[in-house]
Length: 462
Ligand code: MN
Ligand code: MN
Image (cartoon, rainbow, N blue to C red; front, top):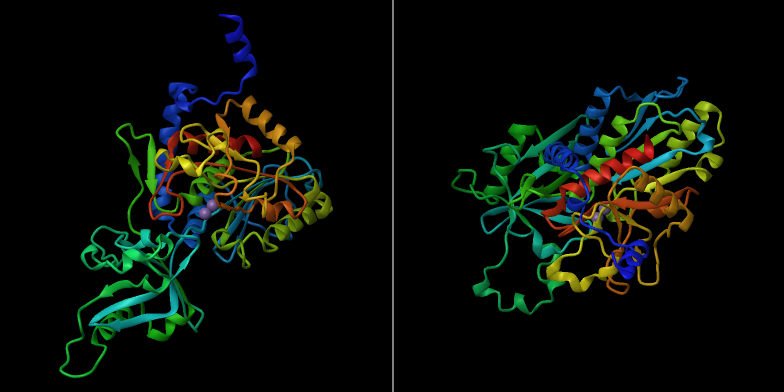
């Protein structure tokens, strides 16, 4: 080898495709891991469903609800269920909480169309639902996509009815219609962000009127009659419901080589599943492992099930009480992988990224030192010392990873739960999976990246 080549190899940083770096057995393991991931995506399309599915899997591995009067020791496994929408799984370590705990935090809510509190109406002999979109979406993407309806009706008597229509083969589905191009001359003058407006995201749910010679709103009446017979609800019960229209499509392999996965809600169930499978494999860690599946990230981590609430603080408080630790000290000494997706570079829209600092599909788990937007606003920027620690941890375990910024400096931006955990005093960095078409009804990830994210979570918590 010539001198310059040798020197270059020694000094340059190069991040190669994971297919060129991993052995066949690891690649097979990644493909196998993603079979379970696709199943999870199909049965967990809402935060409630993801929380419930996660708890079922965890209980099979010996996790039980946290009990304040019990004394826990290394290897004991508990969970904290926050209203069925957010969960924290804990595997107790050998060391006391005040020596620090290892936290991973993903979110299980995804962009979607929520039904308004009073959603049902009839117009032009069609029955429709009014919606209020949840999270940051390009609204035009959510028309002419088959939807399934998921959620709950909470009734005045305290009972809660679970709803899922449009997932099982043969079940009806729903759709938001769009204007035909022939007549869209005026619509096409709108800007892209205004192309389809929030109040135009109305879901078609029926067209067959209740048969009677007189009366109005007979299609709406027929829909209510159906819902009353199936669920025992009346129109008023929509007032205390949480109903979500989510894309009905199932998770599937993408590409001739099956190297990619296409599905709804991969932001952030890809990290949620990776993290969950990791914590379920943790047996007797040195430091206590805490894996959080949070709600409400897509609307700013607000509310009592989001991570801008006291949920995590309460979990650390309870763990600390259990071994007589000071919780403030526990936070100060804790570390966190904020597990969330980043934007993979898309050759068609490569202009949105700065290539030297963008994440690529198949280059492994992506570490994001800071998110936010122009001028590093609204982000926690991980300390170099902590980044070095994570670099060392991942490299030692043979995990393929890359570093990624979220787009060009002044191109826009976004955030994760990282800053809320940083606020509590812990060291935090984002580690996740690069995704294409983020926040669209159908997002794409790469199998090797998903598996590398899972391995990273495991190494961090084990
Ligand atoms: Mn996310
Ligand atoms: Mn998101």
